[in-house]
Length: 627
Picture 1 (spheres, rainbow, N blue to C red):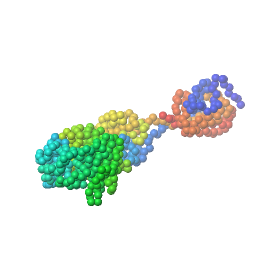
Picture 2 (cartoon, rainbow, N blue to C red):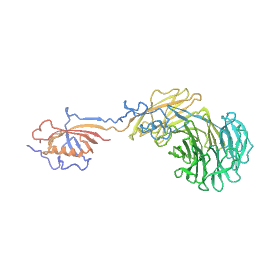
Picture 3 (spheres, rainbow, N blue to C red):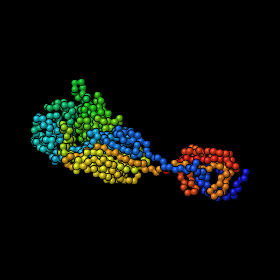
Picture 4 (cartoon, one colour):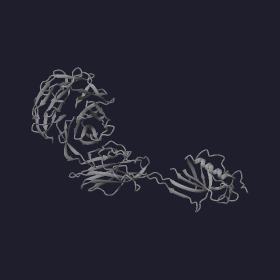
């Protein structure tokens, strides 16, 4: 057997050990190899029988229809996200996971829009204002069955539900009125020392009680009793045992210290709850009735709820014997009351920049007022009590709103569900029947449950859009950059529209603005977004290599060492069998890529030719590039 001779400058093909690094490379000298893997060189065996192959990897996200809305599957190659219900309310950051049915009905925020009808979004009613000079208001029904709005401060004014003055009451009391409360078919007003009540015709007021010592801070009507927060030397909660008449004043409960502020009192099945605070501490007390229906008198009422440190209760609303709305210094919560009158409450549903001081309810909803919070204006948020999740979180959305930034003093609800607000600027805001001219909704960020970049290509919108009304679509990036896309006017689009920006993004949200023509209003039904993955596609590579002891390169140079083929195969096998990456070099073109070797197949189809050891054959490597 003839042995190929080479000088000491030639690189030895038979490695003495596994390369110390997986990014080891090889450089040709006098012998020209075609490929190298982890620095181990080989000649190409490319032929008709052993072709060289490269193909792009399929990077499509395999999807299945996990939504209540058909079409989320990716049978055509698109990544799809669609939404046709928004009753899950506002507050989500990302539209995921799609397996959460509540998430797929939710969005980030809205204003001016009614989202509570399944399958559609429409404009809310507008509110109109009247300057009354009165900070306080309530709603009563007079003896003729007419529902009236009562405002009070320096005088008392009775208005109809449009805000038109019906009558004015200017006498019958002494001092400055500092509060008003409806008590069924009449109302009460109070000064710092006296409580007055009206007749059922809502035309006069009469003294109910005169406090010769102490200062009245607030008054509530609960279980046919007047509950008075009265400051003597301490802040006490007082109770008048007889509603109409000069009934004796009876102490019910005493605050824990001289700075305690009683903020609200509400009805429960077994008594009532009273909230208050001092400093950053706040608690809700349970006060019960005895078997004869009399208020249990106590100087230390039982605490049924304490607020987290720094959060104080400013208003409460009991509803349907089960729910308690709690307006706090930080926002709004919903609690529930059991048959024994014990309170449990869930997380903050909506945080606000100013304390929530007014709450009302109607049908399955509860509303709370928020200063400078609804699109920057003072307005209301609506809570859907019929749809809590397991954590006690209820859907919410921005609702009817003013165009001012004043504080809300009183919020009332008519028997037909019409909201009435009075503000500390002396204005009365009344919800009308005329729709707003526009409203806006912004979806959560859509990222298809992956942080891989994707190109958002198209969006389709469905709605009922009368002539001269419109639904305008915009895209909003994670950095809050807004790009206008299209304005649908006169009818719903039946075609996809192009989405901007066209550059790959991790996620994208969309904003929809409904604009009315003043006669007929647009209705928004649904949207669907189409995207494609924007990741760099890797390649599958199949290369066939010679693996013999003695080999000849394309220039006719011959090189080899006895048993080197087996050694090279074993070295390569050991360097990649744990699944780690390998460095692949094309020594002819200079290309160098990082790959994962998925297949290492050695085939010997015939005995080696004379002069070759018994191991030689064709080595087929199947690899995929890592990008």
